[in-house]
Image (cartoon, helix red, strand yellow):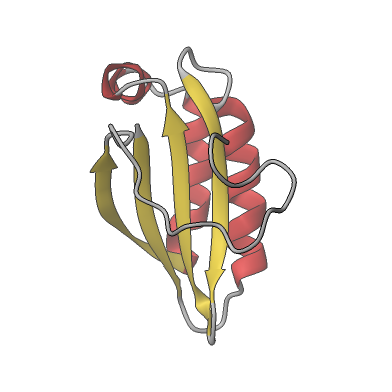
Length: 114
């Protein structure tokens, strides 16, 4: 399952400020059962817009973490609140199937049967 949210950095602040808080909170959140990693990306052409993707074994795992957030995580999130606005994009299940275009050439590890 993936949990996605968009972060808009307010004027006078930087993505790096938010990224510092995000890394500290993510390190703690990733200790929760079912946590499978996180990613933070900067939007091309708009350095004040970021997208975060959190990977979880299941929605139930993420919901359990949210139901009892660690006090340190809450404190980190509150410390970042003044310099950003967060908009939840949503929760997405892992796809049951994925459609990808055919591979170009026969690169190792690609092509039919890979």
